[in-house]
Amino acid sequence: MKRRTAPISVQTALSGKRILLTGTTGFLAKVVLEKLVRTVPNVGRIILVIRGSRECRTARERFEKEIATSSVFEKLREEQPDYLARFFAEKIECVTGEVTEPSFGLPANKFIELASRVDVVINAAASVNFREPLDQALAINALSLHYMTALTRVANAPLIQVSTCYVNGYNRGEMREQIVPPAGAPIPRHRDGYYDVEALITRLEQKIEQVKSAVRDPKLRERRLTELGIAESNRYGWNDTYTFTKWMGEQLAMRGMVGRPLTIVRPSIIESTLQEPAPGWIEGVKVADAVILAYARGKTNFFPAKPDEIIDIIPADLVANSILLAAAEAVADPEGHRIYQCCSGSGNPLRLGEMIRLLEDESKRNWQQYDRLFYNQPRDFRVVGNTTFRVAMGAMRAAVTAWTGLRRLCGAAGETKAMEKMRTTQTLAITFSFYTQPRYRFHNKNLLSLVKRFRTHDKVLFPVDAKLINWTDYLCKIHMSGLNRYALRRKDTKAVAAPASVVVEAVPAAVPAAEAVQ
View 1: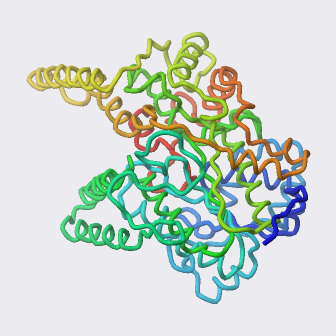
View 2: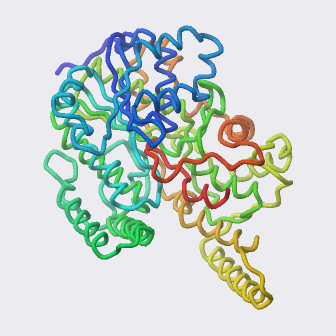
């Protein structure tokens, strides 16, 4: 196929097109949806696949309750309320379905009819709980790609699969926009380039069934399945179940889309928006925020990390723009398989030590401005190496155990602040220390080349380059203010964090840690 050379326009490419979007009950897909509504008014239709819930039996009910009311649409509600209401009524179609089930849980004829009305698919649905039971993570992050690619094949539509840069797992060095090899136990590679994971998935499903057959207690079974997920992830070269299953999802997407247009978009650590729809917009507590929240509440003041290494953070609006550019390209020039990494490490690197210094200084200087985040003046925060952290935790554990024993002798019960602090610090370290001790740098040469294919107007309207970020301004003003305003409630209520069972965006979230620090 001859490569298209004329500049691409997002509005022209997506005008009249019917876009199927998943994951809109989560953070990232809401930013994508808002940007579509605001900048592509002539889009044909946006089809949202949403599963029902206990409170909302239908997808439309859940859309009206959880999505249409989101603060992500504040700008549109204030500036164009009639347009927004009309768009929701006329161009948002909600389909009650479950992407982890064959045909999304729909009758075959309904599934085929749905596919006939789709021009492009953006799959942003995922479970981002790092320590989720293996069966659940496997279902949404990997096996659902069987059904997603089945729909795109019937629809003859391109697939935009949202993944994560951290599918690179335990690999080291310069991570580029290419298929990632496993860093652990070998997995056979198919002649078409992707890794053949079907036998691996069969083995994992057998082990899952063994656990389910052997363990009857629901809580213990869930813990055993979580442990199984971590063990298998580590064996094949990944830190956690999330990144392992997302990698498998990439392989299944490439297999299901052989000879068809597929674009994989890999964000790094997604945090609050840089500019749109409002600076600092965020929903829930993400990776860095879990540690910030624990520090703000006085529940930890040290953490294992490598201050001289690069931590790769990217604002959510830059990721959403990357997804929409990729979708427009796939429609205008549906050619083969493409991989884009949306990241900051290669173009505008941020050292972990600098990030911590900026956030700590801002916290000490202006903590009273962040009334939902800080209850008291924060103390010093220390970054330590792994050995020092283990020694410190060992000493803390011994002291807490001795003090707990004395309390019990005196008839006291309940968890002390020291016990809570130790538990929180340990939970944070288990969940997130891999991400604060980076061993590689992500590159986005292909993404920056993609931008060059678009009109000047689109380059301005859909920015993706991390060089736009002033880290001091972003971290100290935009992100801290956004975290305080959007992610947290008043002092008498708990922080907003997605439950572990919620299907949310394809980006690291702090579910276990957030629960630990509330």
